[in-house]
Image (tube, rainbow, N blue to C red; front, side, top):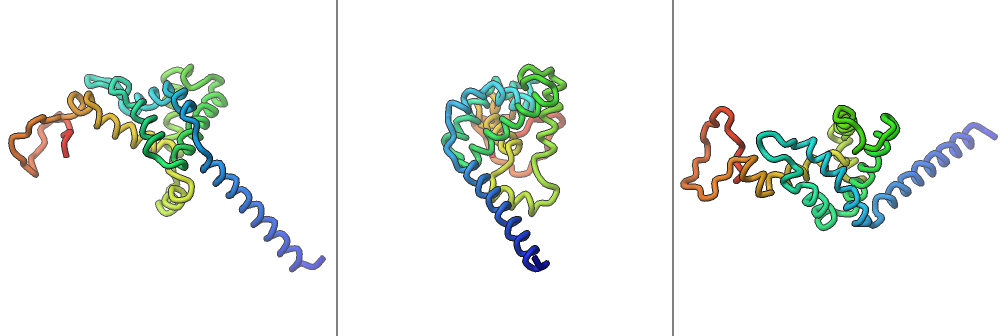
Length: 191
């Protein structure tokens, strides 16, 4: 066997392997999602949302019904790739907590949950923007970014979040485009 034939066959086998892996991942991302699976993970989603917006002197994500909002938006408004990516992210989070702490995510202590959450927040994307854009285009947005965006959106759109967490002016008297913020002033709920 000469060297050219060997190099050609090696390149062809490598390309076939890479193509088959990409096709498998694409098929896995485009299969339909079972809604019961997402509703069964509501407790985990609630804990993760509460870690993003915890309850302090203002209501947290759980009391603002953010987990219901996240699941409803995922099932009714997001494409299949994002739904599958989110479900795969929850599975990866559970597997990571079992592998590193020997228990399910909900059974972990608060510090262990925070460490698991920080791990997924740090590994949500690449350091180069172009790689993130390519990955988001072909394989969907990472789990953590979808969770973060939907949590903030759901909290700001909820009644408790808009009225108690943000400064909501039900009937604005006049519109002032540029006003200085006062110390400890809440963000405005209206745009």
